Amino acid sequence: MNIQRLVHSILVVFCVLSCVSSKPYDGYKLYEVPISTGHEVQLLLYLQHHRPSIDIWALNKLGPKRMLVPANLQKTVEHFFKDQHINYTVKVEDFGKKYSVRQAPLMQLEDPTFLNSYPTYDEINDYLVQLATENFEWIRFRIIGWSVEGRPIRAITINPDKQRTIIVDAGIHAREWITVSTALYLIKKLIEDSDQYRILHEYKWVIVPLVNPDGYIYSMETDRYWRKNRRRLSDKCVGVDLNRNFGFRWDVGASLFSGECHPGFRGYAPFSEPESRALRTVFDNNPEAELYINLHSFGGYLIYPWSYESTPVANVGDFKQVGVAAARAMWHYSHQEYKVGSSAEILRYQASGTSIDYAYSVGIDYPFAMEIAEFGYSDFQPPTNAIADIVKESFVGIKELV
Image (cartoon, rainbow, N blue to C red; front, side, top):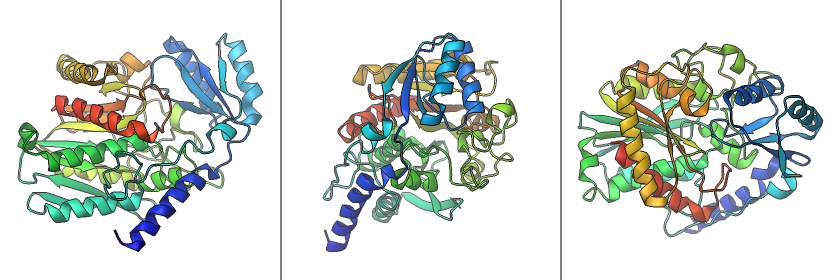
């Protein structure tokens, strides 16, 4: 390994140690709220709509919700809980003090497979270029679009001559780093263990391991818990939630996601963002796709359409059968429980403009959002020593969905 790459790796470690905590979270409190009804979920959505600087973690997760609240809103939030008869506990009194640095990633300089570290944007691209160069006979690597800040968004295609197609994407939400690791591990297994998984090579795989590069970099260098892209909207507000920006039923429930500063802001129009348009080109160019997997964290769910309403899709029985088989396989592998159902059915709220709803609307038979289980960490950054276990479990589930 040359000196330049060694120096680069050391700088990456330094950046994650020092840059991630650039946004001061001093004085923030992390609350935990036991949620058991859809009405309580709606109350939290109402609160977030009117106080968008409140960050609700895993609103799409059954059971307790965690809320990161700045100091100036803590009394307001606690009064709201009291008025609505919602119990709560304070999990972290000073979030900035405890979470300024979660841990240092363990760089694997001699084995850059990212099973013990979260890769940077440049490392992801270097890795994909290397794979495509070494396996040019049956791998294609191309740019599908450009981000708001002008970074290329890349897709890797494995078995490009096959007709039956599977589409996978990751990193649509910036802070969900483990999804990117999962996508890279999937690529690794498909390439390095092709003889072991012959049935998987009956398909063309189109994998976009990082849909939101600007947000991903920002979450690594400035604000670890950033979710959206980096569209400048106003002097105070930045970012569009890319998974609310797809052009199917984009405007349903618009009032919930219409505020520019809201963490789930849907954008000014469907497909207003170059990142969602880039992913649309993948759907457009692969009309024969049968399965679409949209990777998220955290929670432990396999979610199928519809997200925007509670009416079940026509083939809901097939979705349940496929999803339950994958959930059962992951349970046997690691004893992590995955729930299977639509957003309204298991999460008790609806979301419009999602990629799985759009994929289903354009004819993909089985779109799933996989909310990767948190392995008990209840955070968007599982420790680096848990990465390998999580991505291997996710691969088991993906394999079973095929």
